[in-house]
Length: 277
Image (cartoon, helix red, strand yellow):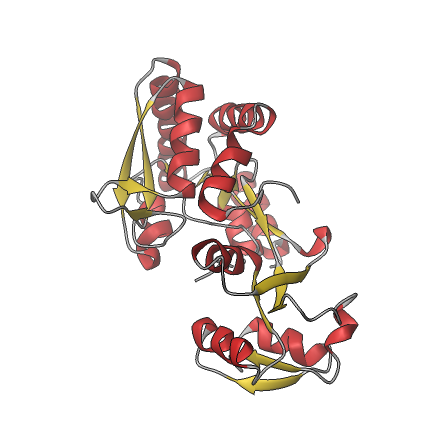
């Protein structure tokens, strides 16, 4: 798994102007009241040391999973707990399958989502807000430590890259004129690189760091990472209309950046600092 991905609002804007000119319908008033009530309820709970409800999978290591004692943990989980501590509230996690995650947020079954969500399409950006990102990621090149050929992405030209043909990373390898060796997934791709049947594999930087953290003796290493402008940030997501809450979460996240908590957690779960773009 990787980041979850998000058009033209002219028609919507024009419709909104028309509705405003004609007067608000009862259903419009109800929706506005509901949004205001949701903001007020969540804000009151935060201001009074209450409990926030956060949707997460619990089956997506190292971000959100159960440890050997069946305790919910993971990078996203522990970051959220640290945010809750800064806010002075308790946090209750609602474990939900990914396919139902944002639907659960829409239905207000929980207040926020912490599950490596990135708002990268206009549709999601129009519907949700994302707090200050707690990690950044992009494409990365994995190859043997002994291979010193990689001084730029153009170095991939003519090399064998083990990739799933339908993936974004397969397309990226083809963009740089690598010869794609088809595989079913990341595990098979890494094995081909280790066996010398492929020179490299491209994948999400965090997925690669997770592998290297689990298998430090693999004799593989990250050679290149996408530039900052091509990276995507993941953060706590909530419905639009919670501006004061968003500001409080942003402030808490900023403190966690500044006091080193986020860096410590990223080192714990990935063996590297993933908090900087």
